[in-house]
Length: 233
Image (cartoon, rainbow, N blue to C red; front, side, top):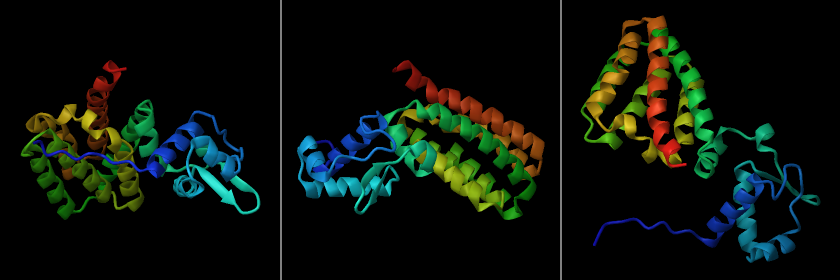
């Protein structure tokens, strides 16, 4: 018998997903009020208790806003939404990935330049050690995760915690489809060789070279990661 984990979804999970999809496809339009809870529960065939739980989750996610005496309004996520919505959006529509990777290129290049000018000796040693961890990873999955830690350390080396949070946000954004983006890391030694010029430029304190290496690396890995998704559409 194979050791497998079977995903279990509750009625609340399913209703949350259904409501989320109906909001994103315009069934419930931004700025509009949802129907009264009794009517909405009947429409989806659930109890009002189940509905309340699903609405609470979507309100916490920033998609709804409830005001007593007025009702529950659908929020315009492109006006008021934050980066915390990206994992959910990518999980529903992989077209968001192209925009995430564009942001990844621009932010990554800036981080590389700043890291080269601000990194400490300890951070330089840490980056070198993380590069070895990529090369010696047991498989593509481990190499991909080790690569993530290289980028986190680059962000730390800037001395600006916001860059680290942005880096985390971008990685979290494509977490739902991470296994489909493993192509550049299937051969750990090659993956390490690909990012080595970036790491070395930062370790050496060569800011312009670090920025160019980051742009080159991020563009090359982006093409490799997105190619399988394009061919399956």
